[in-house]
Structure formats: structure tokens, C-alpha cells
Length: 329
Length: 115
Image (cartoon, rainbow over all chains, first blue to last red):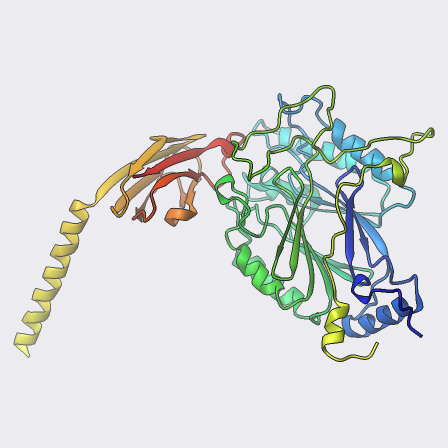
């Protein structure tokens, strides 16, 4: 007997909300809550190899460890605050993903490596069990990613987590905003083992679509990446680089940018130059990924204490595919 | 057979001559890239006029990118690259360095005015 109040299309949503520290994504929150949800999860599991199970993850971006200047004289304060906020969540996320520009470049001998070490030290305070990252051009644009790979491993890779396939793409190490033919070939092969219904989350640094090319907010061969992803019906792309929240849907692929943890850039449609939003000493975290609006007496932010600024992300609606194909649920 | 060979040689010479004349008549603009600026910083073009941009770098690898005019090239030290452009739309556009070149990279721009 189906629960008539349940909307099937909500089952496979990757739902996101700002939690005051980047963005918190809940994967399939309803899958385990009803008998129908469990039945759909089982069906997806047979199709995709693993049944999706509910979990949450956080995206952080553009920490620019080592940056110092008028747009933000507080260094890593926002980054450290973000980690405190995540650690204080009532339920720890399974994953924390960083979408690039972990560090700010330096050409002084040894200084960039020191900044990567500092990033690693700070990230060591994250209580979530898994932390994954991709480089930004400030990490990898000057040396082809050599230092980044020494510090953090491969700059593109994939992994599976509770029925969701995560793909880390590097669109910075070539110097230009490109993924490149080698990585495109790897991606094609990586995706080939999945059926069209597999939930896929891509995380990368630059937008894969033309958001504002004259601000270098694009990926030259992003359309080739999206062509490879387009046969898959449940794709969500997370990126950084633009230092502000942004939502975009192209075809059936949803793209979301997370705020920076160092300074914000202005609205690209506001007709203003691309200059960092000035620092406000009275609101040092304004416009950043840290937006805690209240704390409990125990200094642990509760759900209601954290400003929610995003509507639900409807990144995946895979159940519809079964309905279209006439599969009986 | 001999007549055909002469005809082919004559045709090739004519084509070559026409190309040389075109090249002589096409305006060439030299652009130098250097951290973190282009010289000149503003380029004036005319709608419908073909111009050859001859770009080179004085230090590290840079890029020159302007989607509207289909400009998309790396600028490697020691090499000179040429890009032919024929603007079809009047307006003011911003070309950027799109090969990351250091801490001032984000501000490395070239204004292109098409009249």
C-alpha cells in the first residue's frame, strides 16, 4: 500500500541548504523514512549497483589559505569558523568536499608548500570522516599542479559513497580553464560502468558552463564534459571560483556554486567591475561561507540557529525515469 | 600536358601574389603581454575590418581570450602568435589573460573598442 501523501519525485533529491559554512547537502532524505522509499531504494540499488542510503555532505570553497590583504585581513578566521560550525552540527556529515583554491599562491621559495601544510593542519580539525578536494588555479595554475599533488594526491578521481558516484574534476592545472582531452577520456571511461539512473555528483573549481567568460568564469571544454554527463539523468555539479552563491540549470544538470571563505565577488549581472566586495570589520563574515546567525547557550549552533539561505536543491529526480520506462514501483 | 603544367604554375603564382597583397594590406597590431598587463591596454578596431594581432610575452606564459571575437590563444615566452580578427559587432569588449600567471592575473585585461 503506497503512502498517497508521498511525492515520488522527492525521493532522490539531493537537497541542499546553506548551513552557515558552505552548503550542506542531504542525499535522499526520504529513502529510509517510508516503506515506499525503501522499495524505491531497493529498485535503484538493483539498477545502479548500490542502493542509495540517506547521508549528508558539506561543500566548502575558496579558503585561500595564505591570502592577506584589504579584502580580508583576518586570514583563516572564516575557514576556522566554518570548521567549528560543521563540527557543531547535531549530526556529522559523511563528507566534506572542497571545491578548489584551498591556498593562495606564493612564489617565495617554500611559502606555497607552507600554506598547503597549514591547510592540511586546519582541515585536520574537521570531525567528518572523509575530506576530499580538487585544486583551484591558485593551488595549481603556476606549476601544473605538482605541489598540489605532492600535498593532496591526484587532482582528478572518483569514488562511490552510499549509492552516489562522486567525480572530482581538475579544470585548472593546465594553466588555462580546461579539463583537457586526457581527463575527458578518463571521465568517459569512469562513467561507462553506470546506468543512466545513477546519482552523480561532480565537484570541480571553475563553472563548467559560460557564466561570465570575460571574468574567466567558464571552462573552455566544459561543454564536452557536459556532453559526457548528459546521458545520465541525475547529475549535480558543485563548483567554487566565483566566491558567491549561484544556481544554474542547463538541460537536466543542476550547477551550484558555494561561497568563498576569504572574500566575495559581486553579482556578475550587476554591471559592476570584478573587484572583491570590501571588508566590513563589523561583519567580518558577511557574504562568506560563514553565516551563523545565532548560537545556543552551549555555543553549539542548532538547526534553527543557522540561517538557511537556499531553497531545496532538486538535483536528482531519478524516480521519474522508472516511471517513464513503465517500471512498476 | 606541358600547357596544363604551365597553367597550374601560373594559377599558383596568382594565388600566392593575391595572398601576399592581402597580408600587406591587413593591419597588424603588436600586443605585448607582461605580468599583469597588456601593452597597449586598449585596442581600437573597425567593424568588418580584418586585423592581425601579433602577440608575444616578455616573461611567463599568458593567454589572450575574447569569446566575442573568437580570440583564444596561449602566449608562450619566446614565441610570437598571430590571431586574425574581423569584428562583426560594434561595442566595447574585454579580452583577458586566461592562462594563470600569478597573483595579479585576475586583473590582466585588454579593452577592445569596435567602431
